[in-house]
Image 1: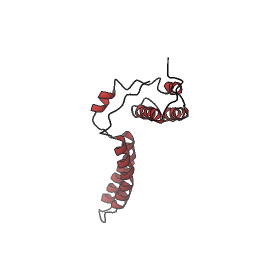
Image 2: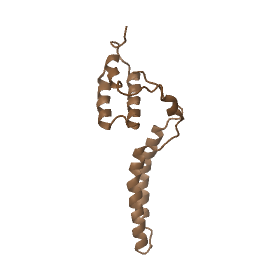
Image 3: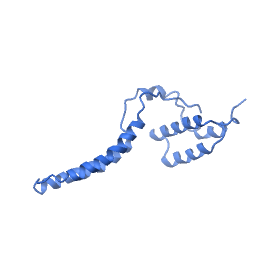
Image 4: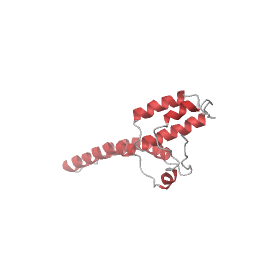
Length: 140
């Protein structure tokens, strides 16, 4: 007898949402697919409606130990967010040097913009890295 007709709980949906987020981080789902599956996930009422959402993704039970042992890495979005800041500030330094290196005006470009980037970076990295949570296997 299957449980496909039983109603799913919010905790079940949250576990599947976490698995979908990991699938995006691993490059298995695009943002559009992720959005579509999240819509399906939160409109599903039974376990039978939840099953197809993860059907084409590999089970996490085999990978969970290797994920836990992987060293922390900086998420790609953080690198992408900081690259323009670095490029613009290198260009400003070259302009400053080329114009005589007087008053250090590149400070007014680098510091406010850098402070604005630090807030989402810190929040995102802290939410991305959870040392005390073991990755959980989600049954498909």
